[in-house]
Amino acid sequence: MRIDRRLTIIGVMLVVLSMTMATQYVNTEVGFSYAIVHPSNADIRFVGYDNSTDETRVIRTFSGTNTSGQLNLTLRFGNVSEMQNLTYSAAFGIVNEERFQVNITNCYVQAGGYGEYLVIYLHRNPTIKATDDDKVLIWDKGSGMGYTNASNVWQLAAGNGNPDNLNGTQTETGWDEQAYVRYTTEDDAWASTGTSDFVWVQISIVVPDGGLISDVFGSIIFCFQANTET
Image 1: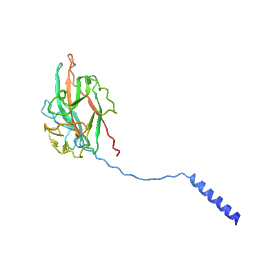
Image 2: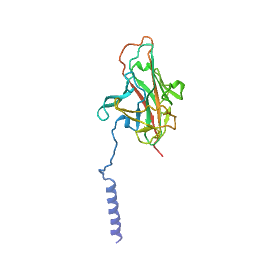
Image 3: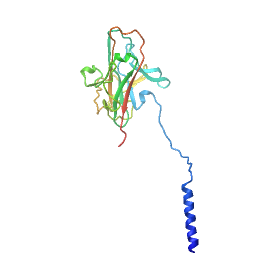
Image 4: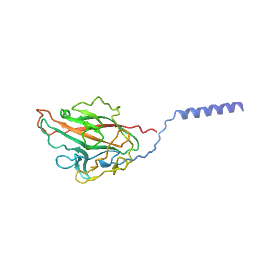
């Protein structure tokens, strides 16, 4: 009986060893979901305020409607000549619809040498110049002001997930059927860093003496950061 028991134990050990050396192939599945929406309905969204020189919002869809076409947003500033300074105190607003705070960390311009013609502020009141307001200078004629993607330039408070409004539910953002963006014209929508879910963006175009005659195209890139851990 002792011999049989010993052989049985050895046999079990061999089975265990052979199992640890086996290769496993497993198929499993996990679902995911997200929605591709109009930029005015995104969790981080831009809303119109100022009109451009053609009496349409400065910010508008590139070429499309509410549901079709090229729905990416663009800024149309109009025509500016050398030695002119054109300023839109509320070219657009940035609104956070996430249910947690989102920080604007950085901003930079890609437009060749023409980025040196732009001055960009984040500020509180859409109806006055940023220089007379609570503000942060975020781009100054080719300079990013030393900000990095780890900076906290402006803090957007948690949103409510509803693109129909901003500033909690106090300010409606309806559809502009000409520019195909959401917008507001309410002059009491004042932003405060850390407590408001939005901020206004002032953009100035400062063309120096001898500025080249050209059609100018470029991009303004905003960087955001959020901590979703609780």
